[in-house]
Length: 212
Image (cartoon, rainbow, N blue to C red; front, side, top):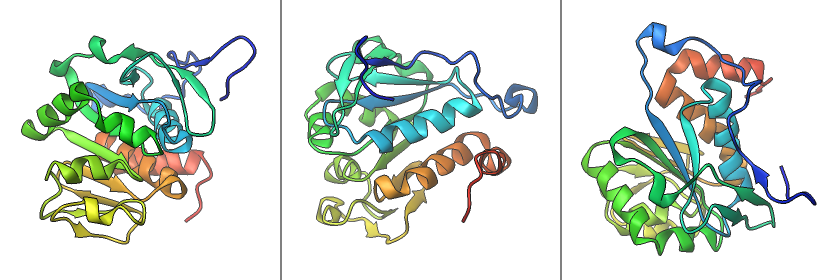
């Protein structure tokens, strides 16, 4: 996962994706999960949930370039996103994911279009996941007021009214927050559980050799 001489890495659908189970036969209908990226995003916090969710269901998560479809992370990894911000549909959102990193978080926060998406999700009780510095975007909007939440140490003051948690990952209603890159796997497993259930998350852990 790096920029090669041929250009940026592309994240299209994987033909060899491991399907854990047929969720639709179990009555679990998942719409779209959008992972928003802007220059300066933290690569581990973005690619870990992207990879793990695609191992479960490759068709229901897409990377979205907030400003451009070619984005470069905080450590120089350049990606080609599946979609541009203008191409997403509000009608099929199941969850949105905001990775942290600097200046990635600031660049996300500057986007009026992304704020429109966040407001739509908040108003419709659609799941919103944010990790590292990105929970500060939600906190400044007052969306975490009265809720348990966590973030990268030093950003707590941005989580207005939140009940600050020291756990690696925190879930409160439709909001999922996590502390940082070192918690990216736990964050990803939690997203799988929230979308597909505990059995799917446990099976993914087992197949990935996860150790508590």
